[in-house]
Image 1 (cartoon, rainbow, N blue to C red):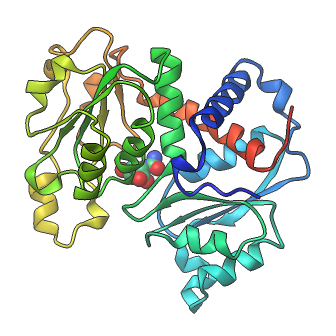
Image 2 (image 1 turned 30 degrees about the vertical axis):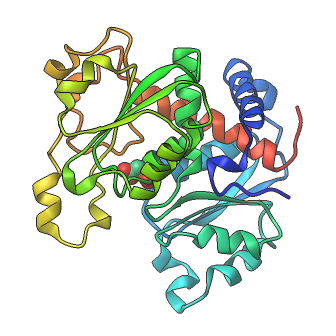
Length: 304
Ligand code: NCD
């Protein structure tokens, strides 16, 4: 039985297989519409989410399966003091697979170690968010046609943004990727990631201004300042509008640069950018459903 805790749990070849399935799902959705009949997905969300939880639920429903779960720790037995290990043992009797989001780093991993059904990490604190990374990779691969040879700018909250950490982890396995980290001084990329890049001799630069680096980017990955991980409100207020991508900044970018964002967006991308064909963040949401469908099939070992 397999779980998904980090994007590195799949080899590059296994990811290729997953993306091939996701692309076939996009092209022939009806072929998959009964694939998970009789199967149940439990979504155990101890932290707010709309997109990720509904994306998982839509994925299972599209496959003909059923869903159950909770979307608020206060409405689950966690409020009574139950541990995730106990919760997952109980859920294992109700469902065939579980997607879990938790504010504590490592909680889905603890759950996986006690589970008799596959567990998917749907985001653990500021740590990892592997299914967002699968979504990001599928979006890049589908629109750019490749997962190698590009310069990617990651902009915003690089300190607390788990989607950024997971995406970098995954991208270092592909050829010729150049990273530009665009963040305020207080929200720079964690040292352990910088160490990993140095060790692997992967080119990167840390900069403060988006305007200066946008012309050289093939991909711009915007992120929101992660309010919930701040210790004090003042710092959040000071940093939340540090970057705002608008039409003017987009005019400095390459004509085939694409803009990704895991969403939810706050102020970091002005709505005027939404109509720019290079803005692909709403398409990205759709790829998220395809890739989660492919993931459910893979972890449930269902072949079509
Ligand atoms: C991201 C997350 O939860 O980390 N959202 C998501 O899953 N689509 C990004 C964010 O909340 O900023």
